[in-house]
Amino acid sequence: MKKLLLPTSIVGSLPKPAWLAPPEKLWSPWKLEGDQLIEGKQDALRISLQEQQLADLDIICDGEQTRQHFVTTFIEHLSGVDFENRKTVKIRNRYDASVPVVVGEVARQKAVFVEDAKFLRKQTNKPIKWALPGPLTMVDTLYDDHYKSREKLAWEFAIALNEEARELQDAGVDIIQFDEPAFNVFFDEVNDWGMAALERAIEGLHCQTAVHICYGYGIQANTDWKKTLGSEWRQYEEIFPKIQKSKIDIVSLECHNSNVPLDLMELVRGKKVMVGAIDVATNAIETPEEVAATLRKALEFVDAENLYPSTNCGMAPLSRNIARGKLSALSAGAEIIRKELGI
Ligand SMILES: [Zn+2]
Image (cartoon, rainbow, N blue to C red; front, side, top):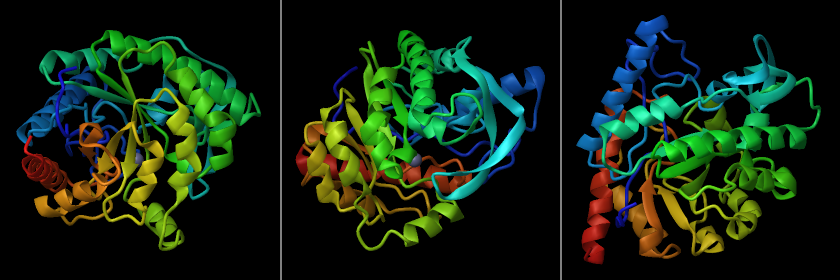
């Protein structure tokens, strides 16, 4: 990957066009089916790419246009999971969701996103990043009626993720990111086996790897949860020492408008940090100066060559206009800092 300074990228998702899925909600059902759905997803991916390019982002994502949800779409492609008879469980200790049930041994029978990644690869010469769910977050987004052990199930998921990641790498993906919002909730599990499972998922990869740990999408349940976390959110402190020792190259964090003490980033000094400088839980579009202020603060704890300006989380639940405005703000904010640094 060509050396870029302050390379900008989104965490993962962008809103889908209304003709593909009803906007501004999670798990939004597809409006098309069959071949039309395949074509529709590809068209949406093209639009998502174009919007990132128009905003002049440096690392391009698929905007998750081909997935209904960042976790369940991957799980859907595995054997051993029943999607018909779903169960309602509380996820991230926070909100109820109707989730699939593990009924037998889970295994990846075929590629999940590899064709989509090849499609994106063909459309741009810029570095591309692909997001996959992390093993712990997967375990926390379904009901297990087979392994009866979150650790064992996470290990099986890690093996499936590793198979997928290797093929994504071969398809030309430059950065593979694992989304682990559950890392911010289940510290003991992260330290006992969650991080080990993630390391199993990245085993043998030579492309860059990232872990994204946030406080969730800008949905009500998450906003309410954040209100209970007090004036200082120190969750990252519990898990950073373990991440620091891991082989993960990049850590993607929520920073802007959050109560995360930015000095916690000292704990992962030396890693690359995707600093969330865009709040996905508000419809207010940041000014470039607001973005720059967050990045400037982050530079006290992250060396400039390791700073990757980004968003706090995915933008799937936002309106397209707002997401577009936020992309431009991210880009313009990073440019302010580049100028300040004389690069
Ligand atoms: Zn997130």
